[in-house]
Length: 240
Image (tube, rainbow, N blue to C red; front, top):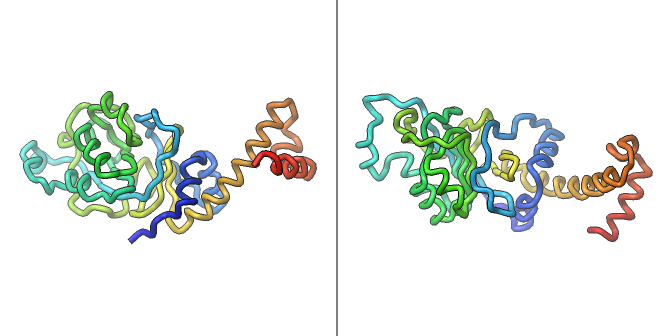
């Protein structure tokens, strides 16, 4: 079972950018942590999506297995994923980068939201996207897509296994952080240290941005030399 994030770590991850997080991950040797080809559908939020991953995987649909009658089964894996994704987790869907059919729609997303889900991420499509855009749950997708998932996707029975999403490996319990730029994936065991270092990086970069905006040249400021670091320490005393 994934150990819960501390309140401080969750609060930090709710405010730092995915740009900062991907830099921190690169410092640790991780190059491929930003989910490619997805954007945030629900933009009316002032805090990041933060939560452990709970995964669902689609393989290509097959005509003898995937027709509308399968949805009569309340334990269909897609439905089961919605009903078993733990509170505070992000449902991450491996749609193989195929947005020609929906990964889910407004009814399922509403149910996940009511159950306390922290978000939805798919490298495929979402149907009913105009309605979902106004929901109070962060949702990331590759594109709007009206057709039902069954024409392209077969939901695999085994839930919460390692998947790929947007070209990134996502393991159950990985911490997903999403802002208006996209979604970063952080291995659970690194979340606390990455969050702490990301917060420090953003304080420094806020100062550097202020320096550049005031007209200073990049040389000596970005990256900071000893003189800039000294000014930063003085600035930090009255600004943090």
